[in-house]
Length: 349
Image (cartoon, rainbow, N blue to C red; front, side, top):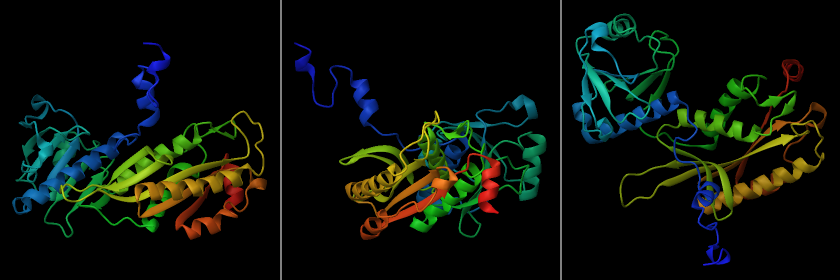
């Protein structure tokens, strides 16, 4: 067979790897940090356990430590193995669990004899795990929350609370997460290493911002799948938020598609870009968001622009794209990124 006859549309000869890499998206949890994945998987497990046996999990707390193993000889505590922890059929409460980020199997020891304060002291002192990322689930607490201690239970004030089960996704809540990400990781130069190169936007700026947003969105919307680089009829969308259903008679709900754009005055090498090119980029971004929202039958569509232009070129970001976005109900957002601390100060004060 000739080489020409092997051309099968998207399939490039026999090199299926190239086709898969080009046309497949990144799966749920791709791009999340280890701690975020740990948080999401424990939330999934607790939600599953609550659904199948909530009446059996009414007393005591469950503690999860992000630690794959523990030596009994180190502290004289005996741990028991569970190799299918993720199926939700095992009792969680009154136990301390050692798990990996996947939370598929785990080792546990009984903690029913401890009160809350005693338990914190025991984990920090006796086990020596006060600095290990931890999650505490108390099913008797109002609203059934999990508490995430990213720096370990020794740093008890550094805790985030998350309701068990999916929360409502709204444009305002998504934008609030993006605002938080911006303040913590994007606003101050150096907060995200490599975003700027000698004062010019990195060639990877958009992918770096995308990866950072995915991690923060994943840490906030725990009951949802967060996908990136998903293909559709109209192209390749940046971020998709999906609510899964386990019932065979229900379909997953596509809640939001987010299109991301980075606006630049210069390339990474310092060459100036045409001053009007950003207007075309923004209009194209709105059109992409419209198409992806329609392709996925999504409730929410948004275009988020991250403005890395120099100050004198930084003006109205959306212009003529506003009417188009409003007509098709596409949410718009703009965040200005600064190349230096002095520029950031001058812009804000």
